[in-house]
Image (cartoon, rainbow, N blue to C red):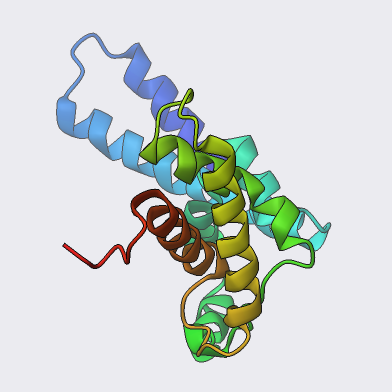
Length: 173
């Protein structure tokens, strides 16, 4: 049996007074190949039992991607290469159902970044920012939707607050 040969080789090495580095390397390489086979077999069994790549990765202390790259079958890797992901434009990007509530903290952050907390115009700027958010929600449906909604809304909110703060277009010098 292969495993007996490996263990016997190690016992012989330990019994020697003068260890030759090349013999130690040869034995270490045999152990490494043996344990790689044991690992691969254990992964195959774990996958057959329904364990996920993440569970396997957690047990051995590597990332899920590393585990998959190391132990997945060549067929799994070929299948992965044949199934390219969809281009970004094909993903539907829509505003959340309750965007006004979800993104209200964005309005507060924008106002806080442009003024001090005790600015007397704070409430007026918050109203302008919330109106900018509402405008963004309404306008987002007519865009090409290449920009995620959070980025789109952030720009609209910032522009609305700046217009209210300075009383002019933010592009005006």
